[in-house]
Length: 433
Ligand code: NAP
Image (tube, rainbow, N blue to C red; front, side, top):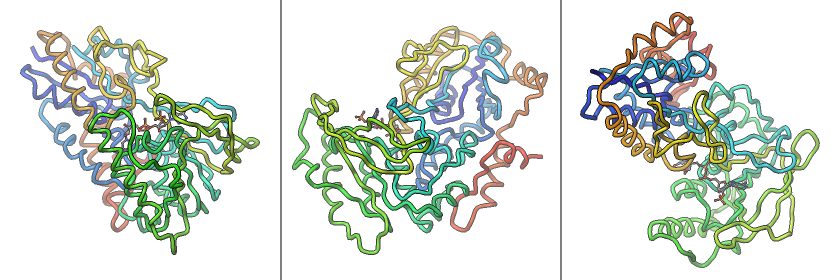
């Protein structure tokens, strides 16, 4: 009998799982259940709008979605429209591929002031994610501080300082483009609590910061060591040497004609957000690295700013009906097996690290486990879910519905842009009505 599988979440980890299931030796029928009307998770809502090449991987996912045996239930939220317990009655296996949609908190005094936005919210806002369309950040400030030295921090800094011309061929949401273009931002500080060698950004992303039209990368050469020291794997050492070489070139960038600066500031950690209701600055403590960890020196300084964006990593929220490991921000699982026919892949399993392709092995593992654990399908699958959602009058979107939304976005694109994103669910559904 066919094994009926529900994959919750239409992001990379979900699609790699579907693909692995289809390639397996058993007969499967897979339904993707997605909370938003739009698929592709972080490809649409997380990957920077000016990184369109990265987003092309969605074409591979589209092929998977259109394969015989694959169903798509968009605009269906597990926990609101249907419970995990109900899905367990309907499907032989359920795969959680819901990612890590919330922000890790700074946890310092003042981090709840107006003008402090976590990276998940801020990136979601400029990417037109319906959850964050109304964030409405006040960008009427000359100085922004981004905390963190990961790729998300670099993405945010870059999107804030690129010129409108540099953003022409992007799908930056209209509301974000208008707000960023009107803002008087001149200085973006990207602050790492450790040093340039420990920074997590990758070299392609770092190099882009030295090639911007209107933004000079500013770095204190005294913070750059002569060479990469420390106990690194050969691969990591090579990556770090490349980053160090790139950073050493930054002081050579000719600043003439440039109106903005991105300051790469290392060895500093935030200790307090300053201001009244609204952020007016951030108090930082100088640090040094001991045994790979950042340790405060007891010396402090302040950076006045009107916007503070901690880009210090994402966090998974507890998923309704599934045991959750609050300390580590992942579901409780044994190599992806959650129990009772439930499996986990991607960031809800591993935590928020790795690039898009890192999710592929998770999908392979989940498919292997499902085929090991389930000899034969016994559950009714798709038709039973359709009936239940119809009874509840849930407006379910098919993959063809998403293709119609996609076509409408592409048709509405400004010259050079790949699409003009709809930024709320009603707008998306209106296309279909
Ligand atoms: P990340 O790579 O883990 O970087 C988080 C940064 O925040 C690190 O510099 C970390 O410092 C710092 N940090 C954490 N807690 C902090 C605190 N309390 N105070 C100050 N700093 C703190 O996370 P991410 O940038 O969110 O990226 C998530 C994943 O997505 C990464 O694997 C990334 O490579 C990937 N990604 C890739 C791309 C791309 O390929 N273009 C784009 C975006 C994201 P420590 O190192 O000291 O912990």
